[in-house]
Amino acid sequence: MSIHFPLQVDGALDALQPAPRFKSVAGTGNQPLANGTPVFNSPDVFSPLMLMKQSALENNLRQLAAFCQENGVMLAAHGKTSMSPAILRRAVSEGGAWGLSAATPAQVRALRQFGIRNVFLANELVDPAGIRLIGQWQQQHPDHGFLCYVDSLQGVKLLEQHLGGAQIAVLLEMSVSGGRTGCRSPQAALEIAHAIHDSRSLQLVGVAGYEGALGAGRDAAGVQRVKDYCEMMIATAALLAEHQLFASGEIILSAGGGAWFDVVAACFSAAQLPLPVTPLIRSGAYMAHDSGLYARIAPFAQPGATHHFSAALEIWGRVLSRPEPGLAFVDFGRRDVPFDQDLPNPLWIRQADGSAPRAATHLRITDVNDQHAYLQLPADDPLQPGDWIGCGISHPCTAFDKWRYLPLVDDDYYVTDSLETAF
Image 1 (cartoon, one colour):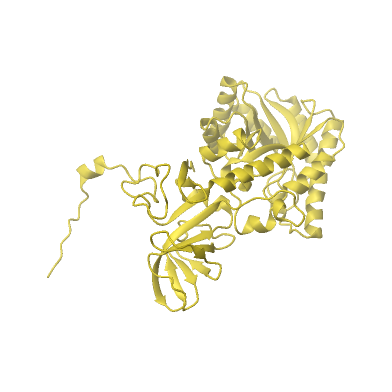
Image 2: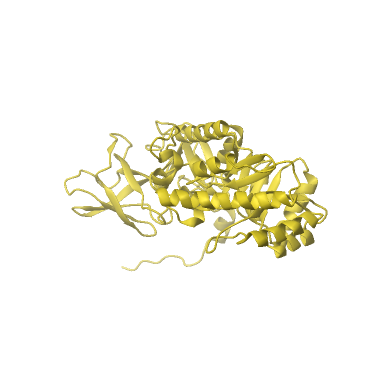
């Protein structure tokens, strides 16, 4: 018996059928799940799916907003973590953020299209097309705030060449030997600040840096290393203020990713400078938090913390196979979950119809392939093909970028909203 299949693509069908956009939605995959959908026993849900817990997201927004208010800190929450308009708008409207941070001109463009009025490009702006796009936007929307970094004379020159008639506010970025972008010496900073001061297109409003590149741990030596870095930025700001190079009546001091914003805020708030200081932190991972990296290193995860984040992201997949007594395979892998910091952490098991939830903390994922997760479990565990496995993830910054869409769900796993991403 021979089996024959047509080799050509049906051109007419191809023209009529758009490519599916949402891999966790059944049917054509071009519409998000309807609000009220129960994710574990709905015919509209494909496995695997990444979801976000609404209660955790709302808690995380409240907690950082309260911290910023208590400490007199401005927040430009980093949008690159999720690039999801529904989440990022909440960070501003509900989470008290002044605006959002971006890492590339394309992300600035996306945030503007999301309706975000104030954007901080926490990076050097050297791409001519990106400079022109941002310059044109600022000319057309003079009431929209924009900040970016400068760390070189060539960077100043490129901005002047391509901004057209626009004026933008910049922060001079500082770093250390072996660190990331940023000036390496006070002398270089002073020279660049003079060039900014003399520019018709640029206004110097602060000093910035990124302490996360220091590789410091949460021990006494690591904390001191971050403090020393902050003090270097403060000393640079003092030098520039002495030469009257700031264009505004205050100095913005900006650093503070997801791991060190507490130390950064304390250092900057205590800074004694000739002009008033506005500390500006740029955390982004806090909105989702996690069950791995940030659960260990985030400021609110430390002993004595008065605020607490909750893990909002979960990956759910179905058991594919139990080929050996102590081994099962789940239908998610590197295409679906982050694996750069830790592997997913099993939390819950449910039967195929979503019933009978039970803890999965006795299980362990030991590896992931492109579309398979290796699940280690006791030989006598009743887990079987088709059952659901729910896991927490580690490092949300490499979780969102694998999904065009995530359902937002309540604590009973009914869909409450749709979260699309724009990577």
